[in-house]
Every structure is written in structure tokens, then in C-alpha cells.
Image (cartoon, rainbow, N blue to C red):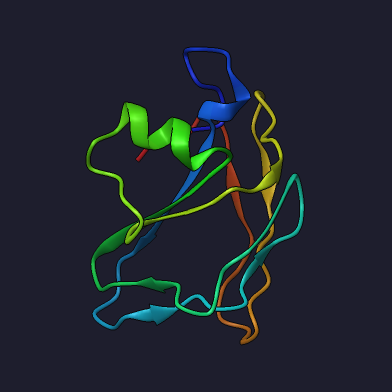
Length: 107
């Protein structure tokens, strides 16, 4: 969520969805534009599963009881633009394309 209703940047998060049938090892993947974060060695995204990367994980845990240390990573530095932006996340293995996020698109 790049523009939280609270207006507090600590409530921002990035949600990643693995639509595949295999677990993805996120270890070493990074966000390098807008926010800065490197996934730790044990980071995984299960098949048909979601992973959240938060600006402030303690803040997210207090608002979303379905989030926990198994599906949530952080804390990232920087913040997401409230107007939408591009987020680049190079991985140790070239698998993904940059994906835009915008207030005009929803899923």
C-alpha cells in the first residue's frame, strides 16, 4: 500500500504474489528504487502465496493480524510515492521484469 489512509508512511508496504506452483527463494533479492531492502537468506515465497515487505513491520503487525514473521519482511528504508511509481527489484537470478504500481490499477 503506497498511500495508506492513515497518511503515515510507516503503514506502507509492498505485497508480492507468487502465482506459480513452486516456492521462490527470495534470498538476496533487492528493492533498489524508491525503497531500499534486501531479502534475508531465509526469505521464501510459497506457491500461490503472498509475501509482504513493510516500511515498519511492528506497525503492520498491529494493524493486520494475518501478517507474521513467516510472511512479512522489513523494515525497508525510503518510502513509496503517494502518486505511484516504478519499483525495481533485481534478483541474483534474472527472472523478473520491473512492474509499475499506480493508483489506476488494482488487483
